Amino acid sequence: VQLQASGGGLVQAGGSLRLSCAASGRTFSTISLGWFRQAPGKEREFVARISQSGSRKYYADSVKARFTISRDNNKNMQYLQMNSLKPEDTAVYYCAADLCYSGCDVYKENEYEYWGQGTLVTVSS
Image 1 (cartoon, helix red, strand yellow):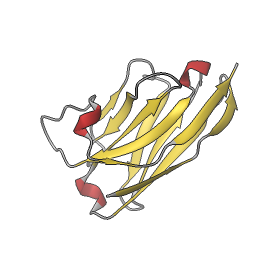
Image 2 (image 1 turned 90 degrees about the vertical axis):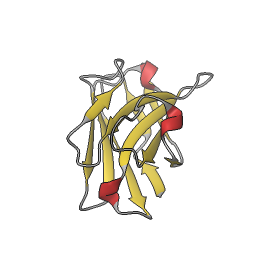
Image 3 (image 1 turned 180 degrees about the horizontal axis):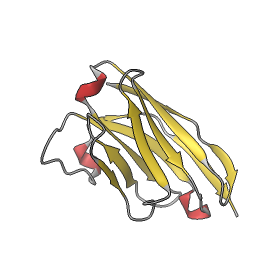
Image 4 (image 1 turned 180 degrees about the vertical axis):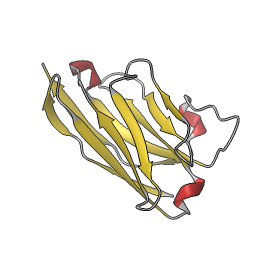
């Protein structure tokens, strides 16, 4: 599975951005998708995940109610809508994928087999 993230940029606190991730190389509806982020000097952390059908979504507590993950299985795309952005959301955001269907350790980085390159999100105060 090849993943290509895009949509990062500079935004003021309180603003919004939408990240996109294009996937190829495997039937899109068979893969679960997620987003992680890595802030300067910190470890990479889980942000959100969406199941193959889109029926199950998971969020880190720090982004719950502000970020929304979605996918379009007809376009082989996943999205992360980020609202009410805060300076602490500044990070490189990575899209990730895996083939797990049930019993998945969704919050753990090593659950995900495939990774895209990151896209930088900078939130100014």
